[in-house]
Length: 382
Ligand code: TRP
Image 1 (spheres, rainbow, N blue to C red):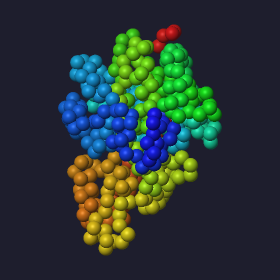
Image 2: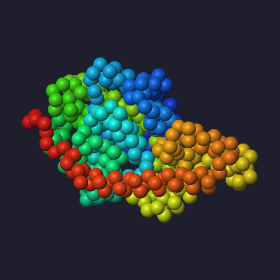
Image 3: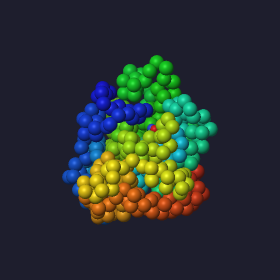
Image 4: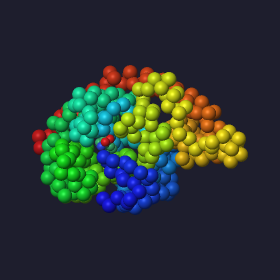
């Protein structure tokens, strides 16, 4: 992919100030228009979740086609995943939150991939024991968001390889090395695990169609950084006789330190709120978070602050505002100078603590059944 000078977005690197409109053009994805959102709204009923109504999801591939099929009586399944490189932080919930909502409203199946192999190959600092350990820990957090045990299936790569491999064999044969080299920017020193890996990320897109001998449509909510994998998937789908997956892309959420993405790669612990942070740590991180506030209280009262660049506003936006009205109020009061950053942080902290408490309880409950969602057997011999 030709990267513009100012920023880089690939599954293995996110760097610079991202221009999302330009990124959509570069990737060649489609705009998530108000019309499409209205259509989804009509089909789903109720309220749209904040991630859709507040623009965090902003791009897609073939969502219209997927909705056509859905309305014609052909339900899709959801697919998303997580590379377990450490504890989850709140921005990792973006794709799973949307999946949970879609599963709940439309009653669709969910497939989750946990790539403990990928993260071992991609992150030189991690041991196999660590990626396997975080894989299970992350899975508990994901399931605790409220997935339905009966309709949720997990590909935990190292444990599910027997179920994935028969299809991976076919997928891998369709992907030339020149493609992955160009798409992911691989170097001669890249280990061959990663060269093969994209085949494994493709497999779940086709798995239900393979298992059921009929085309089953697939919808993948994911960060836009994952799109390159699925461009490869979509290119080879027809040749294998499977439908191309549809995608819904989200923006990366800004980190607490004012960085572009809530990434903690390197040594930037304080850039994100981890789900296993203690209440004191959460307090410290939010209190120290980058905002769009002014240098002095007087100035802020007079000129107002800038929500769009504020990492705390991003927390309200994605999860912690109770509804669109409250979100609009916070935004307005921030911009007018009526709401100062200290007060805003105290208010959001209450919400965060309440969420962490409820989540911790839900997490204990899922541990009893999490293992049983892991798919270990191929649906047929070949
Ligand atoms: N590669 C993703 C990561 O590094 C994990 C992943 C696997 C994924 N399958 C996916 C993400 C499907 C989104 C959709 O986190």
